[in-house]
Image (cartoon, rainbow, N blue to C red; front, side, top):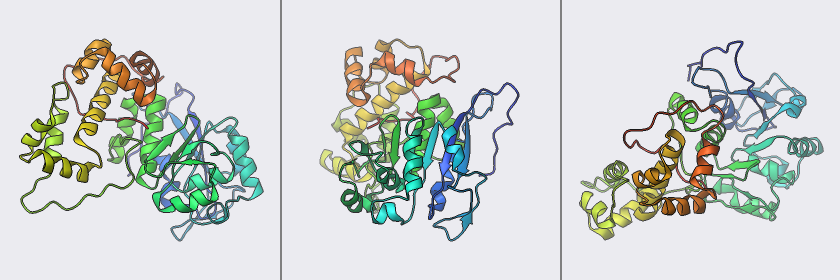
Length: 352
């Protein structure tokens, strides 16, 4: 990716300070994700919203899993300035093998926890857990390491099936692409959907995947002559405000209800009804963020029928009312919104 957001101007607002802590045997891929997805976030005028800096404990080079070493420009003294501290994945080391950390690392992380939002990518969760920062909290990590994680850190409420977990001031993700999902979620949480979608477009990635989506969904190769359910899903997304029965969805796909339900679950990891509910909630959230429509109209346009139904679904999903959601998730960088004239494909889904 070679594009570069517009240069900042003297009027640039204060940027959110992000520090990426590169520990020995850091995973090379995850090391650069925060710089790409947080560092690449800009407002509507092209001004950067985050400053991302990478540090090692002593400022010396650190080896990576990719067979090369990196030399960041900073040592761990900058961690005290962090508003968000990112711990990328590590490959091996005492946090993954013994459940321990070098004393200086544990102290550094515990001190940061008092003032910074903590984010781990993939096996970076082992590092946070070894510092005692995940005890009694929900968290996730790569599914391959579930058994080891549970043995070493039984006090953590591990959910190995989800892409990421947002527990407020501590956020954890599964491996590789799920780290991208979590970072885009952070941008969306901080600055709203439009900014997060802009970052996603620059990197040609999906702007949103549901945090509670399974890490591993089997996607078998369709049989000859079988087009799957993708076309029906696209058709349904354009009609979320209409009542859509399972029989109608199966009919559009030219399958029996039984075959359609089976194929749908194979391809998406969920049932048609659950998927449809998630898409409707995603559309409602998008409308709450991007329009000034009354809640009654948002509920109708998203297929919930009544404001009471939308209110119940939103509370069950993320624990807030539609109006509270609208105030919270428009973000401080939100610009005046123009009401939408029609539906657009939802760019986000339910958080778990």
